[in-house]
Length: 292
Image (cartoon, rainbow, N blue to C red; front, side, top):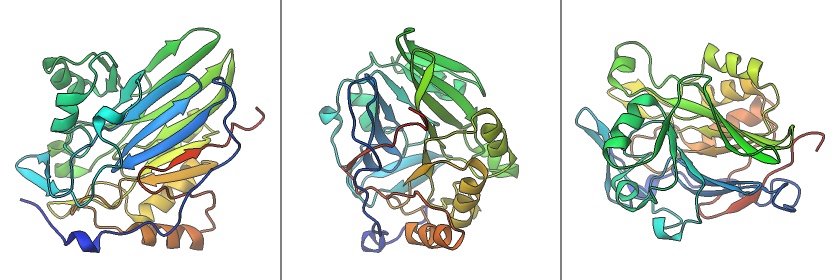
């Protein structure tokens, strides 16, 4: 069971991102994001390289969403899985086919640990991956005192009510690159969440988000919205207040029902700035954290 639309109707980005800020310097100050498609990005933070939500299916192929549901991909990924750089970790919000697909299962380097929910970790363990299950507010640290990467799992709500019980648990991730005791860049990857009070809790713990990677699309499953649409995306920005925002997860599948252009228009009306849309395959250098 699924809802489909013509690939020609897929929303095209209406803004083009280039550099989002200052140039990358040494490995200690590098902060960059490459958009591959759906919610798949490569994050370069200092000497660390992180892959998020690996989705490498091609146009016309089906992503399995659980409970007999599927959706057909409308786009191609900007990179093939064999083109990826060496990875230090994979951050996975949840186990759905548009976030971790059969191509990733077959082709990802199993030496890179996958940080994800306990439910997803159990399945990935059975497939031979090295996993690190995280519950809300748990942290995992890479590196040493000189340079480190701290990943904190934060709450996400994929759906409410009966639908919430049918869908897998999700997590957001706050990823901090630190040099010594100084945070050089703080990235919040929202995961497939709806907006709500749980975002206020994230804001209280992390009041200075440099970059928010926001999963949008207004995904509709069984007549329920299960990812942020335009209005919820704008509400997310008001609650989290990131310095800059990179929208993802908006134009790749038939179940995505809220066009990116609508989010951009409503964000402008609300006075929200710092939103940059990246074309698939585009790499953006990210502004350094305030005061660095």
